[in-house]
Image: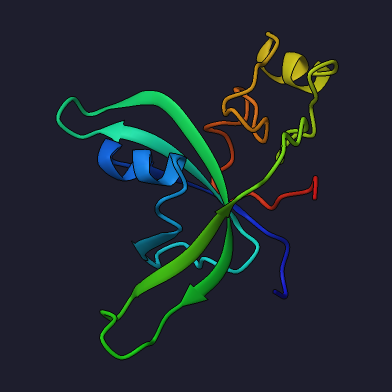
Length: 138
């Protein structure tokens, strides 16, 4: 990896989200319209297409490998090997806030943040901010 990791927010349908959340699905097949790289972070947001709304469930995964330009793989698509960040990080990947210090989120949004995912890797203030932003807290 030559560049700093980036955050990518992706919609995931409930059937697939459940498999990712239970760690039965360790890959993502996607159009490579974002330049996915090893080390990037995927913020996977459960999305209900029938209602055109997010459910509120979030999972953060790291990209371990990117397969592209492979026979049988449609041009422009990639298969990413993804894995969970084990253990609670207790520090937001984007802004660096913690359970006891979210002053930067309060300054930016006017309110305190909370954890958006069970592994404490991204806060509510950063959940939808700065798509593709470089991760500074790794």
